[in-house]
Length: 168
Image (cartoon, rainbow, N blue to C red; front, side):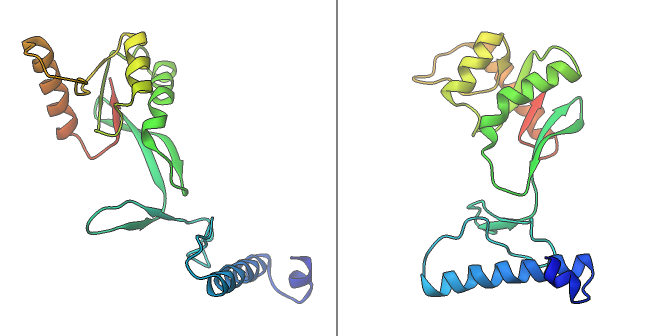
């Protein structure tokens, strides 16, 4: 970096030059070893911190940019976690509930997407006494009260902006 600066480049130009060198090395490695997966692959010279995030969606299999995990409280979105690297949202449920409790107060209900009902999350919510909209494991039984609460939580979740998690 110092060599580049001493040649008359500004600090920003020196950073771009370093990024170009890294991209060159990544592409050279990719050419020499076809099919290899390059970790932390740079996809933008001027924004080297952006990483491709494989989403598997039909219309956009890969997305670029920041991935955000959001808590929604009373219609207000609160960014709980943001990263340019991919992360699994369901691993953040416990942190989201704890953060909600420190910022706002007791969390009594959680409405979440289908990725969240892991055994770990179910255990955590049961131990904390927090109601949720997760589908029951095993054979379904006719419980009108549970069905009604789940319907309310699902309707509430679906009427909000597209977000991953919601506490109130």
